[in-house]
Image (cartoon, rainbow, N blue to C red; front, top):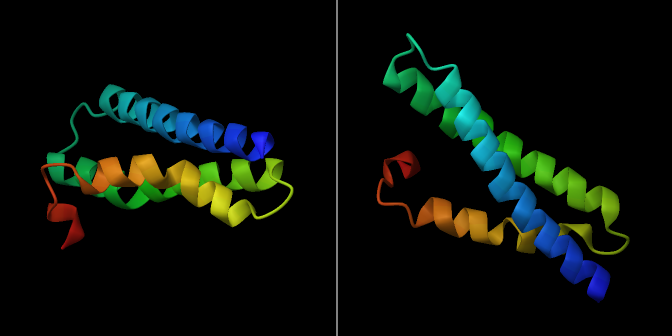
Length: 91
């Protein structure tokens, strides 16, 4: 039980840490790129990549029920994504 709780916390930390890293990398490499291309890249490339990496990390370290642990680890990041004021990405 303690191992699963630690993995959930690790998943939460990894999802927010990767989001910050990707945000910095996109910002650092955004010179001369239009806003629509950046939005498309963040929406359809980096967000699924973060979910896959966190799921793989938790799945690799978890012994039983890795899907449930990965979902719980990604839950705060997903709630933050869905609660953002600009929900135009859902269309």
